[in-house]
Image (cartoon, rainbow, N blue to C red):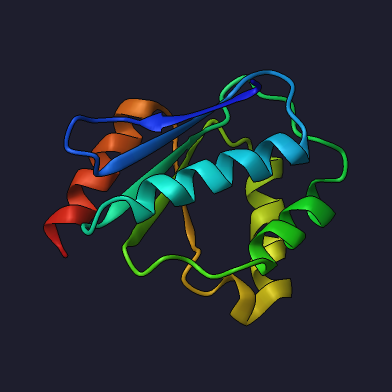
Length: 130
């Protein structure tokens, strides 16, 4: 599978989505379904780390991401989303989508981190404020 979705810690408070170099929108939809199932299996907040380091980004990223963000709502116990390995172009695309989608992206904001260690540190900091 081109996207591995799993718990990142024993406390089941963080889900890690690891993208391999090549992936499809169908694989991403399956990974999101699996993450949603994991989040639904616990009562506490669950944060997500989306590791894109080394992953190729599809050419239809704007359309695919727009469809993904516009579908469904976040679970009540879904926490922060921290993306690792996003280059400047991907960050710009996200900002464009956020402006375009307005309310559809509300509650699904994304933070960015340069590596997994920093992503985990961001999540630890956010957890202290809950």
